[in-house]
Image (cartoon, rainbow, N blue to C red):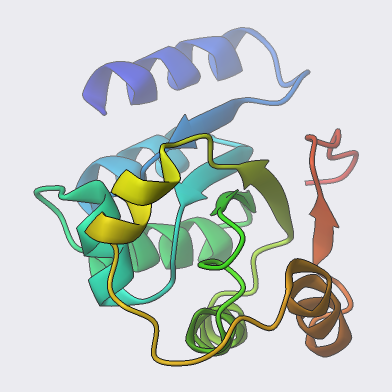
Length: 166
């Protein structure tokens, strides 16, 4: 984080042109704060779920989902354009409980964009690793339609957009 922040400061001391984007798991809020404060323009965070048990089962990381949320909150509060790589696995991502968790997530953290990313993984291994479903799948189209209906400002796509005004 210190090296990335220093790099951003050096770039910004030479020019204000261009956008500085970072892809991250955002699991280290103190480091993310340094990077944001140095002048980060946009942040993309890869996530599989907005539910603790699903997030933890997939990532098995040394940090918690709450740390990711803290980093995203800080970035949003400091004018950083935040998008998510939403790792999509049909029959998992579009479960009713996952949709409800994402809706709650976006109410708290109004990121500007989600980029749907196919999760290319052995389905048997994935489903054996992840928590068992609480509800039925609503379907990918319904999942995306319901998110867009509640959050019309949320861009749902599959590629990055140039942010003209930060």
